[in-house]
Amino acid sequence: MYSYGEVSSLALANNGDLIFKTSGSGSYYRALYCVGNDGNTKWYRVIAAEINPITIGYDGAIFDYAREDGKYYIFETDPETGNVLWKTSAYTASGATNITVADNGDLIAFIAYDTLARIDPVNGNILWKTLAQTSSKQIVIDNSGRICVYDQWSGMHRFNSQNGSESGQAISVPDPICLDGDEKMYYAGGNLIDVYNSDGTKAWSFNYDAGSNSNSLTISPDNIVYVSGTKKVFAIKGDGALAPTGWPSYTHDNRNTFNSNKK
Image (tube, rainbow, N blue to C red; front, side, top):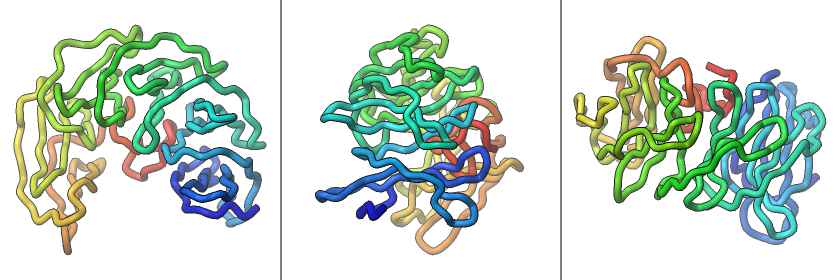
């Protein structure tokens, strides 16, 4: 299957298989692939790809945004066969929007530009939906299970994962890259690492030579914050490790697996 274009998303399946898709412009086929750790293709399915990330749920199923007949959906795909298990209507901005996984395996995702939803992973049914104005559409879930989305005009909004109600007022912090176990928010931008407490007050900052890599930040299990600069990688002592529960970073974990089962 020659699906010209670039690999736009990559996730690690429970068994170590690589799940990825091709996307990009041009009148070529696009496909969702499963490749084993021996490098051989196990299956592929032709798709109308969006460049949003792929997510692996608690039961190992694959969740992804894609188009069909000109309409937009979230699809669930069987990781063993590549067959579609269900699809649910979900029109959203392509690119940064990620599908996250709540504490019981339910999906948290945008199903419209301004609509955040909790979705049953078994059948794709919408459990609740709520208005969520955001300029980023990158979702993280903190250690308490609150869903965090960022808006450049009003700050960080946090929602109750059980019913979709907003938890308190928006707090004036940048879009966080990582959350630690105490729900502190770590952000790299410009030449600064900024760390904010859960209430939005600033805990501390660190100045470094960021260059063009100012958003590459992660937190190790021994509380070290790693960030890449122009010619160096900086290691700074943080206040905690990446949160052990929830979806504490855009890619879920330090290995960037987009898999809710990985650490």
